[in-house]
Image (tube, rainbow, N blue to C red):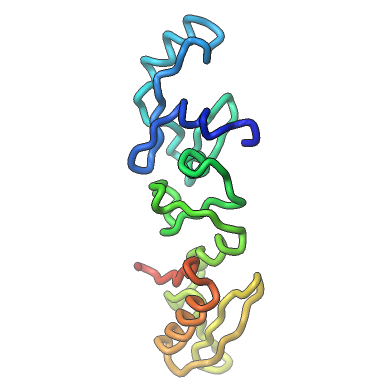
Length: 177
């Protein structure tokens, strides 16, 4: 997106409620009168982007961009390494849900793995010990936090450690939460 500017993005789109809407475009944006006359009635005022995939995308000058990155850029005028969805919902592109993040912070805010059977991120049943173990990632490495008699105690310990280590990117990944 190096050639795209915030001014250009704001000229093309209006932002409302987590979505971008195409603005009416001038004749100078098009190669022909026909293309210009066809484009505005079809697109101006309509929701921009393809919303059928996990992450919606929008094409600008024949280049596809993730919609959430364009929304962040529209508001802030720069693009961080990662634009993170605070609530982990890739369809919620409200600017209050988007934040600058590093790869590590984005990973901290991930949900739990699909094969998790405890229902609590970082809490695993140890068949060998016949107890609950607690783990958390620190700088990309799994850190063993301890062995606990109850799942609830292991969960509480993981939650406290995650809040201390991950701050605002702590995601507890509770199933059903």
